[in-house]
Length: 356
Image (cartoon, rainbow, N blue to C red):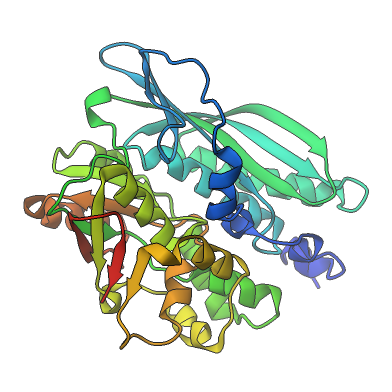
């Protein structure tokens, strides 16, 4: 083997995914457990300039600085979803920055969050992880200004990210309207592919498919934020499409209707999902919110698994006025999100999702 080969290939004894009990956004605490844990927890003292706080399930907190600017702040970190250290760093950083884009904001500053088993992992590998994250920050125009590290039993990496947005361009997930059309920017299936990788069942083509999606920055969110016709927005991550859409439904007090055959899906995931391959978070997600979902009986018996699949660095989900849909799709496609598609809509009714 030559020195130009990936570091994980040169040291086959070290597989990052073998050092953890989970990976990527599939590490999230189950939605049901999280709601119970946070029940009754105080959100801190109220502040007139806190535009978005813990009261809603938004992607980031937002604090008004003045009439023209608001500060957007978020943090996101997880355990390895892949074995290559540089790829892990790139995926984690892309995922963390996405929360700022999901608010319609521009990311400007980041701090690294690093937890590593320093007696297990060579420092060279740890450096490669951080290099991958720094590479993404440079591509996004984000200043990486330090961070915090600890010695932990499992490798953890992510970012705390801050951004700026004009208050009138802020996109929340509780401001959708009846009649809005739902557009999803990236295909589903990342969790399925990550589980296949950990089991040694993912081929090179599938790996490249997963890597291309998880390292694609959702910077189109800045453009969508400037559209008045985009009423609400979030990104689809660890709770799967159903979980994050339900957050929009609950916050906006609306029902959603999805067309399963319109969902963009990674081609390799379409092959693996019917085989039952996927992370344990699929079952945890389904247990948390299946009572709020109505599935058409004619759908494939594995459909619920794909709908609950935890996405890492997933696509933006936009609720927009019908007259704005074509513009939204044009923005997505021009930015390289070729799989972006209309997947359903919102209507008056109790917060729930019907999948047809």
